[in-house]
Image 1 (cartoon, rainbow, N blue to C red):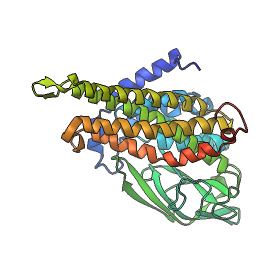
Image 2: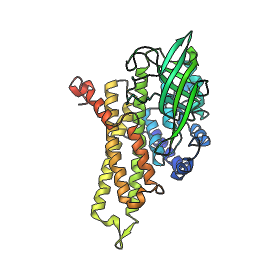
Image 3: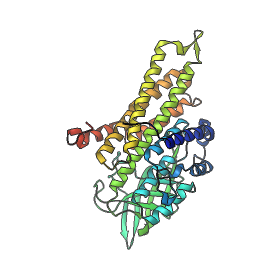
Image 4: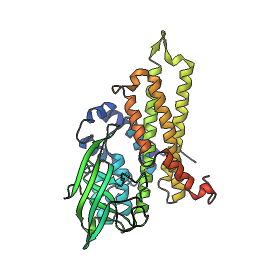
Length: 387
């Protein structure tokens, strides 16, 4: 398979890397950890002006119409300096949900402001008892005349504390874990009955716990067909998993670079510790894990746009498992090779370590994706090309 970038993709990668270094060094995340929203609306606007916020969106809403590989290049650059703006939550998750399921009017109304950087979005799908199962939905949307009444709770909503609009999964029929009966709704967090509790996550980012108490929604707030949104939710979460892998590659690359730089400057017994063969071997092992994670992430980005569920899920679950293995190894080795300073909040390597652990947990952890891969028909010989 050809992993070479096109000239346009090289330009995207280079400009995103330059932007991350210039506009959002790691010191910015440190300063914004205590900020009420945790990122800058001015920087978000700049990202819109660069065209990044429309990278996955069609031209009819002002987007770039790019592939997920294009978005993955941006995500890798954002990961390299831990850029805190809600690209994952707004563009990859909620933006994809509206793109996939929305009407022309909904896409124009909600995606247009996203593309220009005038709005951010959130995707509220997770619930406390769901354990990565998107069909486990207890939030209810009961029919009320031509509209609905929304009640229930969503947990750890990325950018839920600051979003202008939320895409919310809710059950319109069936039992709490039935595949049929899940619908999507567009909800303004300022609506009466919506309670947003901001929280801080371990990686210095922000999210929210959101409760809906008999929130009145018109029929125009439903996104896509009633009862049939689960396939869209699963597709969006696959995008999220591929995005986590791409961002994770940026984190691993920077973690390795920081460690190699440290080995080349830290002295012990009068010599640079990078001259010790045992530590050189550690650095080589870190490089191998980085390249393995990078390769599987590229394939996941390529397959993210694939309509073949089995091929897409196989590639993305493979990459997510590899991110867990490589991410754990590289960041743990980076902490250890930095010594005592590596476990302090003052050193940047700890911030990369924390973000990697969050990415490994988002959209399904290692155990979940191993089980998902094993459940695919191709794994049992039903189709060729994966097992």
